[in-house]
Length: 230
Image 1 (spheres, rainbow, N blue to C red):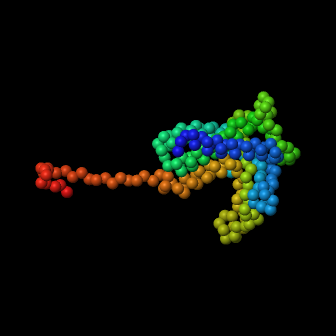
Image 2: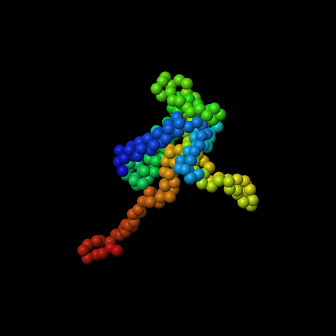
């Protein structure tokens, strides 16, 4: 697999991820939800923003947000060099694809964290306003500063709703649960798919054939055409 193929796959994932995020940000108010396909209640667009990691997990406070953004930035820089390394060393093409999925997803969410606070105004679920963009202005008036942007999530698949854990179930017995609860984006899905495929196919990706080692026989006997050493 060549570097240009990795670049193309990364570009396509980023294009889809960012196009959907910008569309949601500029057409939905925060908290707005609707079914993508009429009659299919478990396939929804639900606009939320999170300040933390994938699927809404958080690292508390403004400092936590900054640390997480910087961590993403370092991870992307490292990932750039790592992808070049595994391509040069001719790793299994499947592993390179998985690493590219993780890499592209990390960049997708990093873009939100770095710039969305500068180029978009805040969306308020109470007044139900749609955020305007400041991309063509002087980047003033955004809802947050550099490194403090929120990640846009929108994909929501509540396949099972209004269900309850059995009373005998540990910890959550009798409580309601929903599957699948998290709201995520294309970048999150790309990262998750890459990690999952590595876990499933790790033996194939990292299989190294052990070469048999033949022992050397030392002897003090004279070797000639009439003597065989076994």
